[in-house]
Each structure stands twice: as structure tokens, then as C-alpha cells.
Length: 249
Ligand SMILES: [Fe+2]
Image 1 (cartoon, rainbow, N blue to C red):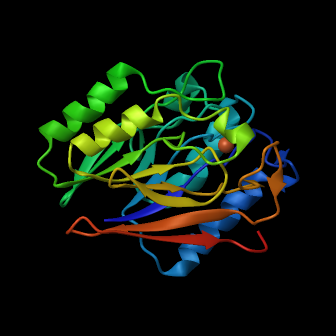
Image 2 (image 1 turned 45 degrees about the horizontal axis):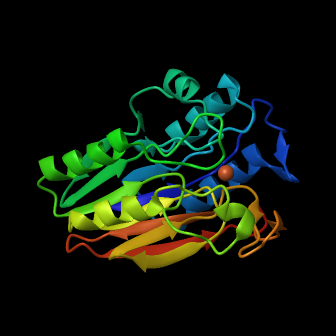
Image 3 (image 1 turned 180 degrees about the vertical axis):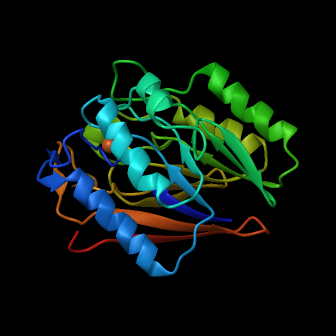
């Protein structure tokens, strides 16, 4: 299964809306144009949250229009900037799904909600952890990919770790206990991260708009360009991932 991982587009109802100098509609468009021209043919789009920046239905409508044009299922989980009710109202089903699960070949994909109302940091509710475990237990797929907004690891960045995932260790321990979770893909940190924890490859993909400076103690933006990740999930459980920076976007 081939996955196009997009995250943190931070769209506005106003197409000219910008986040720290990046016109987020334009940078998402540029990322999608790069994907289309790349020859990488995804089976699925994974969109790991912070879809909008201005709490508007109009911004979700832009997301819907831009991504529906790909003709692929779009597997969504919410980020701290999202409004779940608006997400469910505006993103029609199909091709969009919200914190769902799907099986293809030997792989199961599960979307987990890490959002806590009114907070930038995240926490996975016990009910979500249990849903993850039950969904895995009920599946015959040998390999699992989890999609979630907040990475379940520290980033060695004081300010980002202060808005991290409260129970990342518990998530990783319970994911690893299944023996089948190969990877967890995330957003939120607007930077590249790729490391194995408890046998689970944790991948954070930079945003389709502005990036944050890695390992910064105080909030700081990075001058790296918009990005996306191509992920290939092999029938043997292998996870091939390639990060693509879209220069000039
Ligand atoms: Fe974000």
C-alpha cells in the first residue's frame, strides 16, 4: 500500500490567508502539484490534522476541494487547531473518513484522536487506546499503521515538548504489545522525525506550509520549504518512507 502523508496545512477561508509568511492554500496546492507530477501513485492520503487555522467551514471546504480532486480515500485525524464538528460537517464521506480504520492487503490503518479541547498539547483518551487495541485484535492484517496528530515521543525542543502528547509512552507500550504496529505517523511538530521506539517506527512529517526549527528551546520558525512524505507499506511489514521538500513552493 502506498500512502501520501500530508499534515498541518493550516488553511484559511480566505485563500490569501498566510501563516508566518506562507500562503497556506498556495503551499498545499504546490505540494499536491509536486505529488501529481512525481509518478508516485498513492492508494491513500493520510492527513494528520491541523487542517485549518481559522476555525472556519470555508477552510475545510478548500481542503475538501483540493484533496477530493486526487480521487483517493483521505484518512483524517484531527489536530489541536481543528474543530471536529466542522470537520465532520464539511468533509463528506467518502472519500474522507474521520478517525476510522481500514484494511488493505496485509495492512490495517487506524486513526487515533489525540485532541484535547482547548489545549495545544494532546492526550489519548482510554476509550481511544482501547479502540486501537480492539480494532487491531479484530483484524486479520499482520501489520498496522497508526495515524495521530501529536507524536508519541519528545522532540528535544522545550517549547514543543510542552505541547506534546501526555501519554505517548503508554500509547507506544500498548501499540508495541500488539506485536503488529510497525509505524505511527504524525504531524504537529512541523519538522522531520524518523526513529524507532519499542519496535514502532515513529514518523513525523513537516507541514505543507511553515516549519518549526528543530531542537529549539523557544518557538522559532525554520526556513525549510513545504513538504510531504511518500510511504510504501510492504506486504512483509516493511515501511519505506521518503520525505519530499517542495522547494520554491
Ligand atoms: Fe500544526
